[in-house]
Length: 68
Image (cartoon, rainbow, N blue to C red; front, side, top):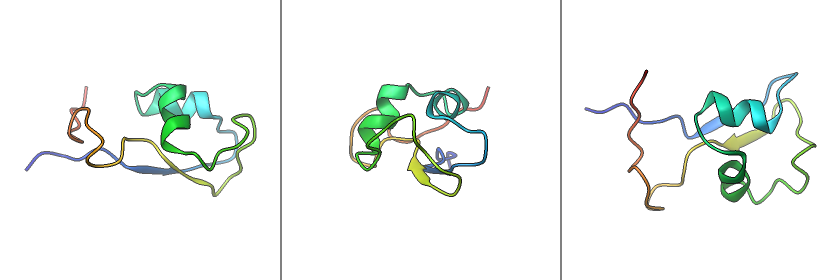
């Protein structure tokens, strides 16, 4: 069975959306598209739960994850 990509990430102290996007090999624009609840990209808080992969059925890679 193929590994599935982590769908969500819980923000930790010191995180920002650019850092989180890089950690999950996605773009900042994708993070913002998948998280319409984020009104201000410069304002996230520890404990916030954000989507870091496309919702299932949204096209794309089908959720498969290949480690480097």
